[in-house]
Length: 248
Picture 1 (cartoon, rainbow, N blue to C red):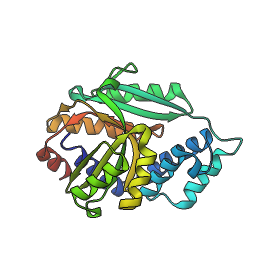
Picture 2 (cartoon, rainbow, N blue to C red):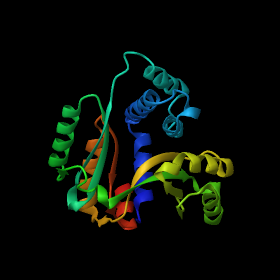
Picture 3 (cartoon, rainbow, N blue to C red):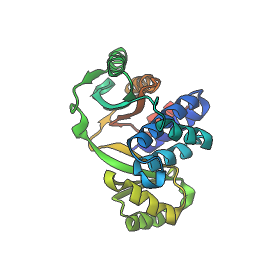
């Protein structure tokens, strides 16, 4: 899947420059609150909460915001959120998975459907594109943590399945059910990760040209701009040349 890690880096840098940091903090806080409400409020006893806190810290969410999100889950007036996955096709026939966390399913469904339609996409039924993805755990590290061989050995010992190393860093994949254990083992050998999360990893991809990629970016940006949307994943393939044009 050439281009995906570089695309993530472009998004990351863009996010740093945007006023969207507060929106990201809000989404990460919501994930923490839901994880804490569904299980133990102690991250050490709640794997999902531990991962949510770890990801929030990696995105520079302040400690007091994290603690407030956990505390909020224990209050009697804490909102109840439904976790919903939407699936559809974006510009160029790219498969798109949208993960939402909402207190109003009708509102969110309407917004997602409208966003797809306005941006050259089409919302499908649940399962319409999910078969093109595998649910995986993903742990990322910066390039300076070590060379490809060093990270590969650490990943093997930690029980990971695969590693992608490039000049941008290292991406380590594992079974979704093993993410907490693998991330903990990697931390002992390589230190704190840049990111630790569950993802949808494409098993098949659709190649896009510059115009198609620009249209897809518009759809993804519009979806991610909605407060109810936690994550958007697409199975695109794009050349390094096009990525460089997008970055410029």
